Length: 175
Ligand code: AMP
Image (cartoon, rainbow, N blue to C red; front, side):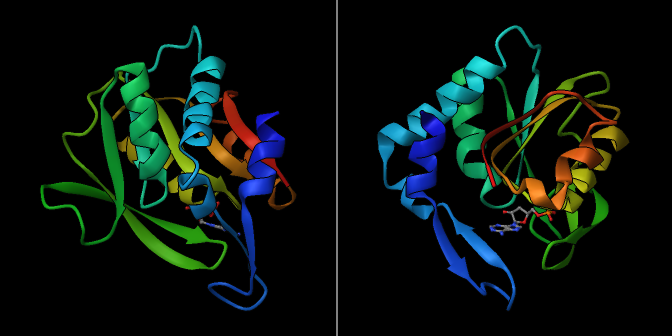
């Protein structure tokens, strides 16, 4: 039900930001307030009974539903950002992307040892980004409680690279 609504809303942009990439544009979802609410409710439903202490959202589209979900679950939200954006003391991890590479950063006081962290991004492709996010959480001795994505590009096998960290891998629509 939500899957078909998402499939109709998501706009495919060929060759963006590089030739050969079929970009999944989620901005039409953001214009549909009730669909945004459904996304957050669907995540919350799938997380029922799980202990989540913190949601870590990945820049920048991981902030959108990450913060909404944190508000729904009444837990803190922490931003994982690209290099040079966070103002306070931070830790770093390099990551490989479907279309490039980057360094991700997290404030050193974002997570306390033993806290259970749900990592969220809008889309899972190769898994390079969330694996770097996982290492950031682990550097601060957090526990990865699971992963939540709106979209998974299953043909890129990102989920396979996450299974060793958690068997809770949520996606609402797969391609
Ligand atoms: P990856 O590290 O390969 O799993 O890539 C995931 C990150 O890159 C996410 O932050 C996505 O927002 C972005 N991304 C990768 N591929 C696409 C795509 N085809 N369409 C939209 N965003 C993408």
